[in-house]
Image (cartoon, rainbow, N blue to C red):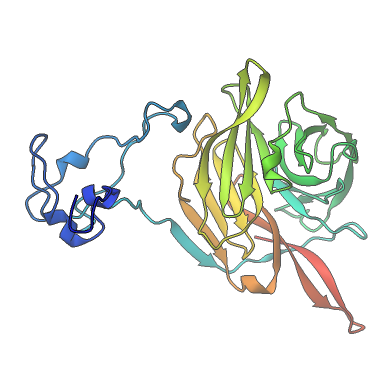
Amino acid sequence: WGPQGQQELWVSDMFGFAPEADMWWSETVGPEPLQGAAGVGANTWSKGVIAYGQNEPKWGPRHEGIHDFDSSGGHRRLSTLLPAVETRAVVPVPVQWPCLFEPDHLTCGLAETVAALTVNGMGAFVPATGSAAGHSAAFSLEGLVELGMVRGLSWGASKLLVVTTSGKIASCPLVGSGAQKATCSQLPVPPLPSSFGAAPSTVIEVKTGAGWRAMAATGSRVALLELHAGDEGLQWLEAGSVFLPEDAQVVAVAATHDRLLATAADGSAHLWRLRADGTAASEEASHVDVPTFGSRRKWQSACLLPSGRIMRLASTWQRSKGGASTLSSELLI
């Protein structure tokens, strides 16, 4: 109780959000120093691990605290290190698309090969590097009509994994990057939760649990889903989330076995490291790649090449020789 009546104790009462808070904090027992005033000494109380809700299995294992008392000016803060932001110019990749081909999605293979795909399953393979750059090979995915339109994809072992608007996941075997068609079949897993609607999503294979992880975006959040075997069979459960800035709108999600990439409507690509079980090492992106002049294009998708470079898919209005404006798809790296 106080002058303003009964009040709750907030996190700031313990950790502080202002320099003055360091002079309010003190403990009667515990490791030295017991007083939290700046200048007394290093805050050994903050060392070790921080894991809220340890009795709740969904929060996962304990995680190390990365806050550095000395480099923050001697004050305790709840915020973590800001991600590294790189602003750079992107370069168009020379490519000749198949006739009337307007791709919507992108995924990168292990051999520096990119697969572009429309929402109805028409695709093209494009070598990202080498003398063959510019020559695309058309292909088609059959059997997707009854499952739904494409809302995300990834490149598995000799197959494309496609997430559809119904939430069902299809496996489309491919024999090399020269295959002209593939017959897709639904994976024996439940559809992604309907709460995600037709949001940008992807799925990857992992070596733990039921063998599958999925990522689905809602606004500026990307949910990490894992497949659990319960009394009612297999079901998708959230294992965590990662976050973009609040004003960001995710338009595409891509993942490899150790990295997660979310592309925002402004073209910025946000990167996270993934653990072996498919969970993210931190909620905040470790790296943000921002293209210059991003507002001139409509950004649609992006993926990570084995070299670590980011390949982007965008569309822009271009004026033809006759003076008419046409919407043209382009790859940028």
